[in-house]
Image (cartoon, rainbow, N blue to C red; front, side):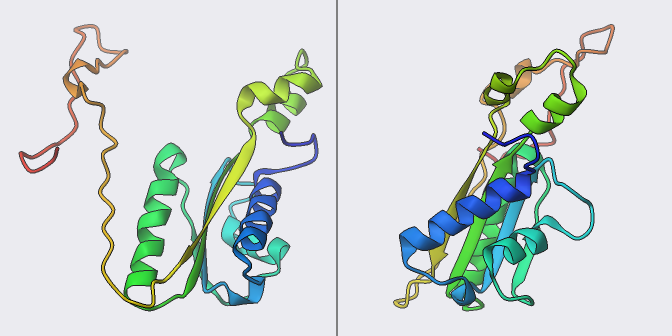
Length: 171
């Protein structure tokens, strides 16, 4: 749970430090870092720069802040796997975090310190390593609901069904 003065980047830095320690990898061995904050602390500098600095990863490594809410981590893993497969990186950190609790604590006069857990504050990091034997990896996204035809636009008086633009090739 985030403290009152902690932001998402702080939680993600802790998760990255734990992942590096668990993998026995020093911060200067990381070739790329992809972060998915919700919400990001600032628009600039990007969150991946802030987290890399907090963790001690040298400046200039590849990275990006992927800010697409819930599916950000899947997209970050896909990009990381590309880096590993083509040989651009040996170690890649992917981290996602959520720190809505401190925002609620500061903006909701009725919020208590124990309420922060309700917002799901936390972060998780994945340390990926390239397989020296090679091989290609594939990540497929299946983030459409199984019953997508039942999604109804809530603001339409005629209860129009909202359907994503799918082709026959999408499962």
